[in-house]
Image (cartoon, rainbow, N blue to C red; front, side, top):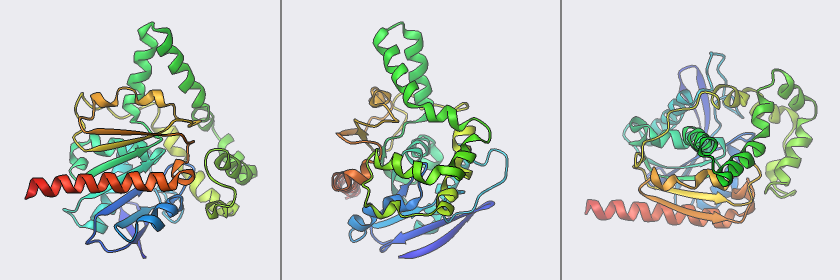
Length: 303
């Protein structure tokens, strides 16, 4: 394993590179409240066949944080991803992108922006929606007058209770510092992470490192989402993995993604939010099969 500190503007991103960059590069984006260690099961399973890259998002884990206003706006996070790709794959290199939770949310924006999408060979999304599409879906449901659509919206609104709580000043920070470690472990164990998973073996200081500063994700993005893609606007091949028992992200959010992604494959897993932990073998197989199929198609076109 190679460890890097990738500099991007006023932050340094702690990055781990497993394997030879001559192989297809898989870049994993973690969510909240997580750090790059959440991908350890994927690293172990895939590092022999691929170059597996994980990094701590700005302000999380071993990465530094920015005090600038709007530091957690999605456009800044997209720039971070580009910096990591440049450091690992070179200025013209391309990678296969995989995201979970906020990592998935950010990944959707990455492949929507033409400037960034050119660096991505494929995208695998788990438990995270494009924020712009989520707001479009919510608005459409509310204005439709359709009881079923409005019920679907109400269900997601209820699942998103933590978003509103994280926007209360001071309270979330106080909660995490006071009894966050026990709450964090309980939430993860109830949503797909087994009690004996080494990922849970952290201390309060480590928890603070990836829960406090990244609260900016919830305070700077949901109420001012990025622009939604146009119909058929996402050209990157996408694999959408939906955890059908997710207690935070409703599968109804993804009902019309085929309108925006011409090359979309969907797989449903009977799993909860941290499906890449609880169903690691299934998840790893889907990632590998999808990457291989995309690379084979690319090589065939080039022949």
